[in-house]
Length: 171
Image (cartoon, rainbow, N blue to C red; front, top):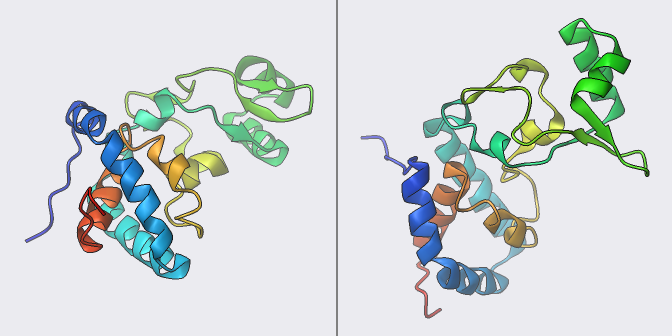
């Protein structure tokens, strides 16, 4: 029988509010584990949870994240949308004085219901979120916790990891 994961955003947010101190203890407990072992565990759990929890059923990250965009991604999106790059930039993109580009609206302009309307051409930061497939899980864990209450994949991966590591709040 397939494992059932929590996907109700309201339930996750309520549970997360009560686990702030526990998660802080868990973050500190990760220091005692080998980084490569934690990465392997996080990658496996991410694969398992992501197979059961569809991002396109949620789309919550698109309602509150500011996404950085590269210039080549802007060029590709302009072609995909069939509009001049200047028009795309004016309508959807903000550029900092340092030349960094990002979506100019939260929630994202391209979110339609819970689905990205440019999914096949979505930006690298969108493709990579929640970043659990990357190395450095322990070092990036504080950033991961920022989305623990709003991303079902992060929430379930963290909770599964606590169980696998036999974590108890007193650890």
